[in-house]
Length: 307
Image (cartoon, rainbow, N blue to C red):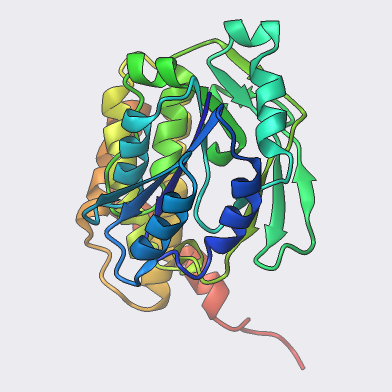
C-alpha cells in the first residue's frame, strides 16, 4: 500500500487541484492522510466532506503545531509500505499512483529504503511545466533535490526514527532530508516516474524575504541537526555549517544596508556552530566587516567617475 501524507493549514483555496487529481486514482492499495493543522478557514470541514465520500481518505485534525509536526503525525498513522509527501498546493499526475505502484513492486525495490525521483515544476495555474531530473542522488554527502521528489519506506522511517523537526517555521524539510539520507545507504536514483508537480506559489512565505527570520530558522534547525548526526563525516558537517554561513552573509548585508543592529542570538548560534565544526576563528566582528564591505559596494554610488 502507498500512503500519501499532506499537511494542510488553511488550504481551502489551493487543495482542490490535489483532490481532483488523486481521488479518481484511489483504490484499495492507496490511502491519503490529510493532517488538518488547526485550520481556521473552514477547510477542515470541507476535507471532512471529501473523506466521508471516499473511504481511502483520512482526515486527522490537530492543533496548529506546524507542517513538521503534521507530517510526523502522518508518518505515525501511515498504514502503507511506502510514503509519499504531498503539500496542499501541489498535485499528483493523473497516473501517479499507478506509476508509484509499478516502481515499488519491482524486485529491486526490496533492497531500497528511499527512491530519489525527478519532479515537475510549474506555476500555480499548471502552466510552464518542466521536469527537473536528478543529476546524482547525493553530492558531497548531501541530497540535492527537495524532499517532495522522494519515496520513503515506512518501516525504515519508523525504525530509524527519522522525523521532521517540529518547529513552526519553514525549512524543516532540509533537516528531515539529511536525517533520512544519512541513516541508510539503500538509496536508488530514478529518472522516472515524475509523479509529483510542485507549484511555485508566489504568495508562499518562502518567497517573503526576511533575513532575520531566515537566520533564525536555519540556526535552530541546523543546530538540532548537527546534534542528531554525531557520526556524519566531517565534509558533510562542514557543508551544513557552510549553508548556515550563507545565511549569515545575507543577514549581515541586509542589516548593514538598513543600519539594523546585528546583535542577534541566532547569529551567535551560527558562529558557535562554525567554531565547533569548522575550527574557524569566527566572530561577529569578522563577519560584520566582510558584510559591511559588500553592502557598501552595493549601496554606495561609484565615487570619482569622470563625466
